[in-house]
Amino acid sequence: MAADLGANVVAMDAAQLEEFSDERFNKTHVPPSCLARFFLAENLSAPGGRRMLYVDGDTLFLAPPAPLLRLGVAQDKLLLAEDQSFFYRRDAGPTGAAVRRYFGDLGIDGDKGYGNSGVILGHWETWRQLSVEALHYLRENLAICRYHDQSAINAVIGGRRQRLSASWNFLVPFRDWGVQRVAPPHLMHFAGAEKPWKGRLRSSANHHATYGDLLDGLDSEHFSRGLWPEEARKGLERTILRQRIKNATVLRPRMRARRRMFAETEAEALKPV
Image (cartoon, rainbow, N blue to C red; front, side):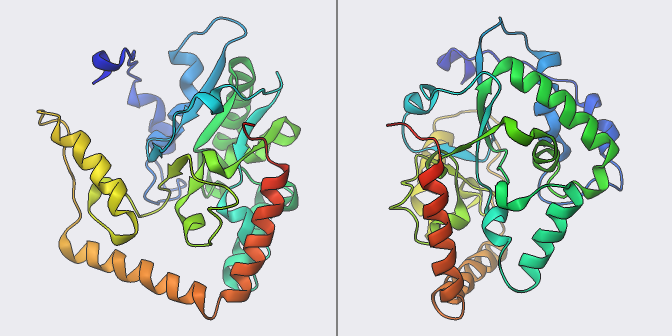
């Protein structure tokens, strides 16, 4: 695949990540390999003045990335879209309270933003410096970094962040908020349990077909399908359906508030013209 695409694959020694695989690492579906982005500068070289686009593995471009790559980013800035937690911070109830505590632990002002680290665009030198700072923060504060690399990045980025339009990092929860007209998805980010390459879900059947077509063309034992057991798939379908029903009924006022906040945020975000 890499040869066909003209891509250069650089392998990183997993031993560099062993220090983070202890009891302080928050056990989620996200493995320690998510931290490899902090070691890019040690494994890659780039001439001065180059820019970088980092994209998580659980993403899918729905449109060509050329408009994203043409965005003008200041030399000392990095572009990140808002994470879903940014919109949860004002929720009444346990979720909102937990997010506010989490932001407090990191020492950040949630009202100023909290970026999702799944898509990062900026200048290579800016990322090199930030990744050094974020890695140091992570080592010193691993227990409070609930979302690992993302926590550390937000803790140290400060004024070096610009807000990217959610169109270029459209998280799965946004789909159920009814905000697609405000930010048409150009890049889907399957953050969370919903991974369309692992099985067909009604909510992402077309994306499952995309991955299926790709894998069908690969005659290799190294591309395991890793499909969900049928009961697990049905359980996820039920969870998605319950959340959609709640959003349309008891959570309708919350959804309206989130849509307003989302529209206000998008109005300030950097996006291709």
